[in-house]
Amino acid sequence: MRRSVEVEYWVIDGTGRLVDPEGLVDASPGAEREFVRPMLEVKTTPCETTAELRTELFERLRRVLERGRELDKRLVPLATPLHTDEIRELPSDRTRIQNAVIGDDFAYVRHCAGTHVHVEQLPGRAVDQLNTLIALDPALSLVNSARHFEGRIVADGARSKLYRWLAYDDLPNQGTLWPYVEDTAEWNKRLERCYESFLESSMDAGLDREAVEASFNPESAVWTPVQLREEFGTVEWRSPDTTVPSQVVRLADDIASVVEQLRGTDLEIHEETEPDIGAVGPGGDTVTLPPFRTVVEHADAAIRDGLDSPALRSYLKTFGFDLSAYDPVSGAIDQETVTKAEAREHRLEHANQLERDLQHSGSTTRVSEGV
Image 1: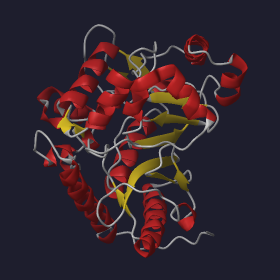
Image 2: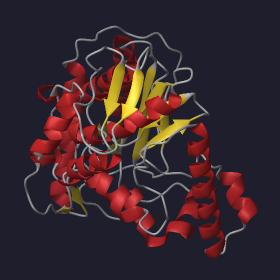
Image 3: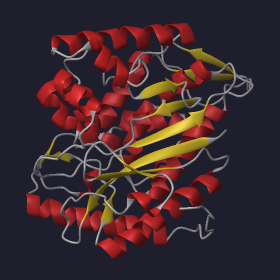
Image 4: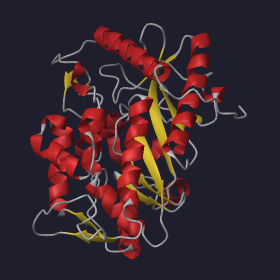
């Protein structure tokens, strides 16, 4: 099953201050600007194997870092900047519209750096894949990388809290994890309802409907953690924080491995009680998922408490996750508050961790790509 990743990193200078990624974007294929100025996104192509994904992601990051050494710029794998002054956006119609619709709460989104995992859709099984990724959403806790926002602790997974509970609080069905779906028709109906609600909010904010429709379609106007992406032929999981590349690759591999179980098996969703879940059933022909309310309980725990939740740890183990293989760094900063100067020092420390992670990788294969 092919998989790809998109990973967002904060860009800093040698003092830990956030800076524009100018000069880094053309350092490697897959390196792109994000909608805020001090962020760089690094994407991979769809990869057939874990080794291929690892090699490509690591090679692209190495190229970016090599250019960064020339420009005194580094990458930081933290889900938020911890504490900083206002983060500026790149001007675009999309961000102008979102600011008008979401208002001041859009500031929460500007402080978030995450990882997106795509797995290719299996013929006739895309909805089962979507539902499985919904059940896997609490696995976001495996890579929580920041607890602080504007200098204070807000949750073990600060980014997820900003997205789900703060930024889109006034927009119906935005930002939250959607329930399981029966079929693609139901998914498309949800998209259309959400899109219409977004258009109505846009007009309430004084925007022209045609201008909004020119920048957003039903798929691109939705911000929910798990999505069917017809444009790419994938199912996308958008919940994880940004983190060091070895953890990104491990998570993508583990997610793809669970979804891979759907080949040649049936999927059952238990609505009343929580049975043994995750693994293929005793007959080898069924993957079972818990009730959606159970998923939400564990996802909320993943955001609030991370892997400190015993129930969450047990839940993830039922899906086959090896918790000892992950090292979420959100709890590494145990200060209740962080000053701006301390935030810069922490960014430098985590930039060092990313660079060590690349150096210690067993992958030394160089990918031949045109730049």
